[in-house]
Image (cartoon, rainbow, N blue to C red; front, side, top):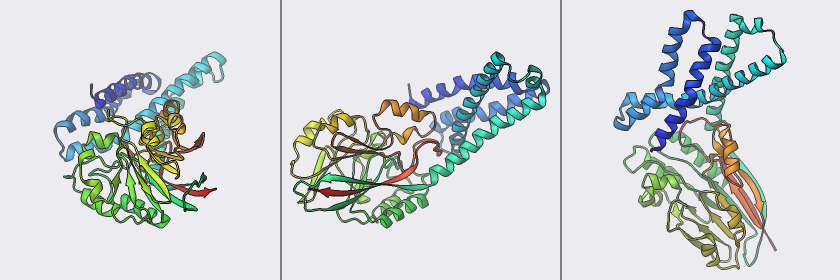
Length: 372
């Protein structure tokens, strides 16, 4: 069963609840036909655009797909507010806070309906602004120097760009301008950077923009699960963009530090982290990139000093972030596990609806001080 089929089923079941509860709670008899028409038109845009878009990539499919991307989070929060309304009605039934006559008033019910429609709209609009606002998350850490000649290292880290044909070029330009203003010593990409193939109209422009990043030690990255889905794991995008990909391999910067990168966990042949790290010299600090933060505790038991991951998007939409917090030891931000400094980015962009109600579109900057 395909991902979109599963998502569609998960969309339709709460939709039935929404339709029935709004019908019973808020819709007067003389407006029910109009309600059916409006609800069905809005609610069916996503599943219809999904199935139609698989066969046809014309302008109508693209417009419907764009609208659906905003309606998905809208219906999520509409569902939550209707659910909350039912919960409050149950509480009122038990404790008699408001008289039944008040609740049955048409004016009162229309005001409640307007509220539970407006609140999801406000949340989605706020999520759009949050998604399009690039923020810098800066951290300062101390790492044992060992035999390194460096005293300081500034790392810029980005994950989950999900570049594709409809990614705004201006957004990519803004991100790179911010990176160059940060002036990092080392630029790292944590996977899921590119979705599309070489035929996408904007890909050459993305390669040119990313290729303008200037650093002291270079630009490196690892692949994520979406590069595998779009077959960019075998593509030339990264070499053209000036990004050196590490595939269960490492680069030793003489008398400075070691940078290692893992294959994504969907690669069946990827090395065990102990195998990868144990093969490295123990005389220099070790920085490791792993797209998914799924083996944090195992990695913290190795000689890894810094771990950088992405993938989670911090759930992207509340309350999905509550799930990612349970799945991963760290879903977003920074925490030290043993002697390993762990950073998980919520990503600079997203895959799916361009709305972010949890996390932020971020560039992670790590200022490392190497101490004796």
